[in-house]
Image (tube, rainbow, N blue to C red; front, side, top):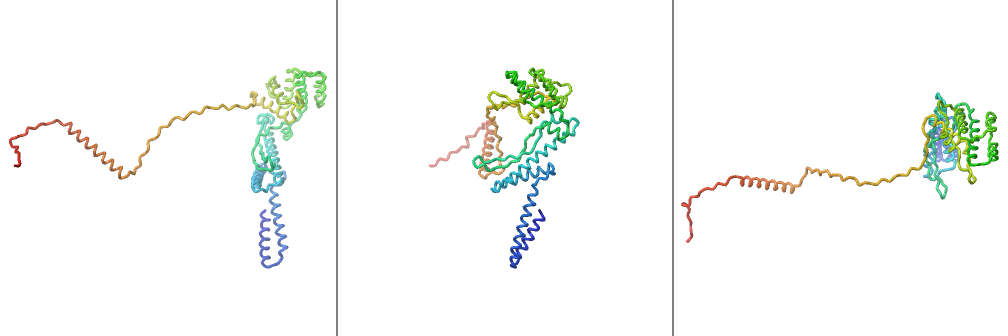
Length: 359
């Protein structure tokens, strides 16, 4: 990028001097155009995936692409190529995060148990918001979501045994036959259902002539599946475990009054849920919408007002009024003292009294 910029600056300087001298103008224009192409190519080369990027590089590139896409939306210059590049980096970042997480768990002493306990991990995700009327992209936001571990991919990444996969096929047939039996379907219908499922040769003999219609027999099949993946000492499958895995593996069918099994990915996650229960020894749970209880708002207790602080500065009028009040208080106190003294009556000599009366 620096080399291309140097070329562009050099060619631009030479082109400017040639314009002043009137020589080689057309050739310099071609060299300038080529330098611009080199700048664009080197800039885009940063966002070309090679497959050798580290997780940190992918996360930084995804963040930078999101910021550039946001700026392009504001300026109205967002292209389909930019969106495709952004989504490609999102996929590469998610795959790399998955690979790093799986390999870190694979180094543990009991990788499958550790994977069952972890259950999920955060992965970067780009949310693209479009306008309802024009379908134009109006917002690109980078966030995270929790990705559940796929036990088949986990074993493939860490080169662990996949001998338990036929047991998944066997249990799928067991589950659908049990559901069909509980729906009061005829023996002919049950036979047709059992033939529709592919069965590995290793366990095909187990499916011949059996009637997996009791909870006890279904729990034994589920126990064999768990033991094939990772045996848990001292723990046996019970009716509650079968009830949970049945709820996870079945859903409403497309036809009226029908039930069907979920896809293979969802079945792997259902088995992972079961392994998580055995590994953590915690009870099952249900997700439900909680109603928010409205609490009555109580009026806050009245707060006592703090006395106002008197400022140090007072006007001359106020000071005069204070002095007047103080003087009156002193006068009253003096009068009180006079009144409290005992009354003395003195005798006056009237002989010397003289009245001057004017004629």
